[in-house]
Every structure is written in structure tokens, then in C-alpha cells.
Image (cartoon, rainbow, N blue to C red; front, side):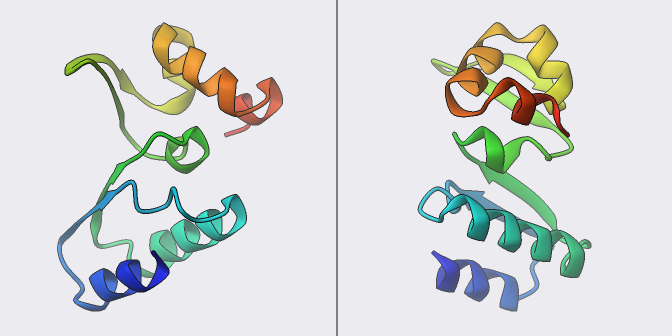
Length: 102
């Protein structure tokens, strides 16, 4: 996964889509890579397709899809309040403290 991500970033595209690219990484490596991308490639628009709340919770916009339908759009903390599905998934992955720390 790290090599595929590095190859994509090396080309310096305007937009990059990470289709569940971080799921095979451990949480620590995931966070480090996303932090480096944010810092060094801030001019590249990122679209992250993911199921791991820890990976997407810092995104500027999250779209929650259930059976092909959009059921929530917003930031992490907003979705915890307004989207039951998002909150339900989030609670199965992270503790209450981890969820509300943004």
C-alpha cells in the first residue's frame, strides 16, 4: 500500500483518490502517512474512500452512503450528532473519547 500511495503522490496530480488505500496499514502508519500528505501535498485534493472512522474523521467533508443512498454529509463531529448510521459504525470502531476528540 505504501508503495502505491508513494507512486501516486510522486506524479503530483491535482486530485488523488485513495480507494480504501489505508485499510491495510496499521493505525499508526495510517496516521503518519495521512499527516505527511496533508503537510507536504496540501495543494492536492484528496478523496478518501474508507470504512475506518480513524482514517476519515479528520476529513473536511464526509459522505455516508448506505445501500447506494447518501444518508449523511458533514464533518465528523456533526455526523456523530446527525447521522445515526455514522455514529453506530463509529462506536463499533473507537471509544467515546476517541470519537469526540477531533
